[in-house]
Length: 572
Ligand code: UD2
Ligand code: MN
Image 1 (cartoon, rainbow, N blue to C red):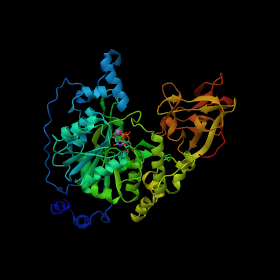
Image 2 (cartoon, helix red, strand yellow):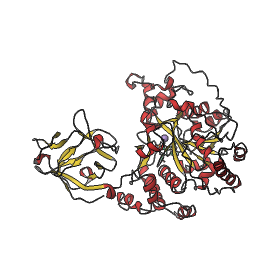
Image 3 (cartoon, rainbow, N blue to C red):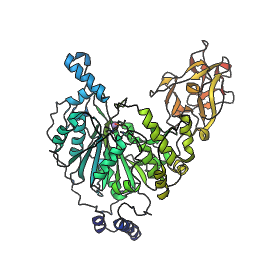
Image 4 (cartoon, helix red, strand yellow):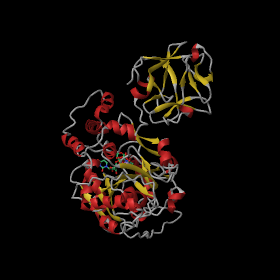
């Protein structure tokens, strides 16, 4: 394919031709499994390069979609409300079992057509872009005991929404499911779809090793990994594959929209194409708004691919050759977790680029709990320790402190360390400084640490979040145990704990706990020379009311009820 690419290359200006043909030649000369050194900087995909005519002849023909009744439930991505109290006892039983087995509403999924139609979620500008660098793709979907209707809808949505000449195959890796339906009946069903192959693992591999098994069978130039509870929207494939076609060391994620776990409404999370992946030093993945420097680099165009420090993990594409070069995943990772950060760190530290393609949308069912039998705590922590040991350098200590240095037996990591050495990857510090400078690092970014005590009454400010934005802060007797009374005042004028910040609600004046957005505004706080906690947006200060419990925002005055002191001030 690269050879075709080379032959069909139409020269642009001289200098560029020289650079690019050298790059292409090196790739075509490459030995198996050894990626050539690519001295061309990673393509950020912001130039819509018209000098390429592409690798394969562009055939924009799409498969003909089967008829779907506009009156069918969930049509155009609409949600379906089912009131369990109104179901017959037999149906209610199905409804409950659906939730129990899947941690989403399988009962509703079973009502929806397998080829349901969705709205086109993309930014208008996306529809006009012509993608020309389109190598063929192996889609890899791993699953364990997935819901039948959800799995089938995932597979059909891939086939229905992909140009056939790009989609080479879909590899379904059954990670040792117990449900009988996912054995013979699944094989029979899929045998009617020529591009779909099913591989049954002989033991439970966990999603990480299951993906590796799928990779080994894959024949496409690009691997596109998907979870088994997704729906692809119109035009999902080309914007992603094109970026890899242009540069083999670019790894790309689609925008992940939300399929509601209860109603199956497809929600084009408008905010999601303004966000990229981040993480905390406690090794939690999170989303964060695209920082100003990146908005500027993209000329404030929302349809331009955005650099993303990390990926959520489930939905992304990578060149097969590059995935092999990067050592795929740590095969010592069990069941679930940490592989998304491992690959993200590796891509950036070892010379690649991770981009989010705003014109590509795939919906995913986000669950509130994992449906797996064993406890996530055990394997997840062990995976994280392996990750920290190999990639985090001294930064690993933040995570280790969090788990009280309880490292246990995390197995042999020498081959992973050797990989990092062999690929000559940069330091974690380089990654933080250059790729994710927005990350919150307590000792670097804090000014004051500890509990916040009122001067009039020895009561402390307390706040919880637990995944819920907008919970007001309260007061409680000081307990001196950090926890929910531990606060950090930052150089960026925030009062925060990890990723949660004080947020001033303009409607009722309450101070609430909210995910930090780092854009000041309602999360900006000044600690004044009179020890007041002042919100510059309103010029009001936090005051302890006469009942010694309630908190309110009031015009600033120098009085003890508006004075607060930071105690026991050490960084975490
Ligand atoms: C997210 C990712 C997921 C993975 C995980 C961290 C998204 C949308 N999802 O969690 O892909 O990166 O973070 O590891 O970014 N599975 C198996 N064998 C197992 C366990 C799971 O095959 O032992 C399958 C499972 O059926 C599913 C996929 O792996 O298709 C991901 O699992 P998940 O949906 O529970 O993970 P999720 O979305 O919570
Ligand atoms: Mn998932």
